[in-house]
Image (cartoon, rainbow, N blue to C red):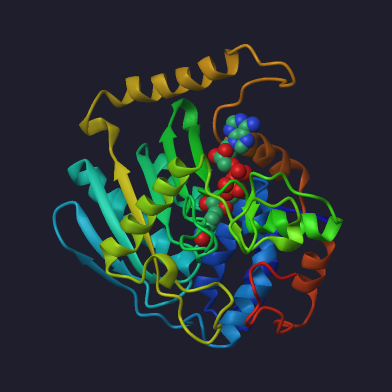
Length: 349
Ligand code: NAI
């Protein structure tokens, strides 16, 4: 089904509102999900609504959170999300980090006790839109083996970065620290296809090409990706006094309890380090330089990070977004959820 960005946002907002979120928070979550869909990151778009609706309905996402913002220094603060919608708390916390960076050059805001916050590109883009560099990292549920391990410990712990360029453009880099998302394993299962041996391991910690034998995902670049996901867990978990590593709550384990997740936003104001106009011109130059690199055999061109999503965004804003039919049917239905996610194993169908 192809629908406009505006219609998609309205449908998501209505469903989450019906599930129990306030209109304001439903709108905030919808904005982040539509941002992901419009940029082609469908894994973090409308397809998540049913899961969120079930969690809200079962009490595992606070529908009336008392957000608490506390400055702990001139450049540092803690935003307590009271286990409400992570998208809303993370957005407001980023606004605070931007404000601090406007005044003092940098802003660090730890966002604690939140639910899943979606695609991190949304939050770093907020900073780039204010002519700042944005960095954001967050915890996610344990499903990745540490390098050399046979049991999962870390999450897919993503890292996002954005830098402003000229004419309102930006470089937006946003990645999980795993080779592939678990959604890709499910996709391979549904198609009865083998997966590359670099994606995941079985019960013994051995690389597997059988998607049905997957017990954990692999970090990107072996020990280096493992180190990055550890760094993310320290910055967004241990630093904020939250559960960390294997104790981070699982997405589906208990939908009646808040997830207590952590996220860290860092905002850097280039104007405190160099001339802002030159900075933006040089980011634009970087984008052009990368695009002008001779492509390797088999590649049509070199894209700068986030460029393909920005191209998709322009196209989807003009022509509408392709949403999976089942997701669309759910959004337009009267149902709030189908009780499908409670206790679901992340590697189950
Ligand atoms: P991905 O693998 O699709 O892309 C990773 C990065 O590589 C992006 O910045 C993309 O622009 C860039 N890229 C991809 N192909 C490229 C090419 N040909 N040339 C240049 N650059 C290219 O993203 P991934 O790792 O699957 O993450 C998807 C989303 O999942 C992200 O938005 C992330 O924040 C989100 N996520 C959220 C979590 C949470 O708990 N909130 C947990 C894990 C991921």
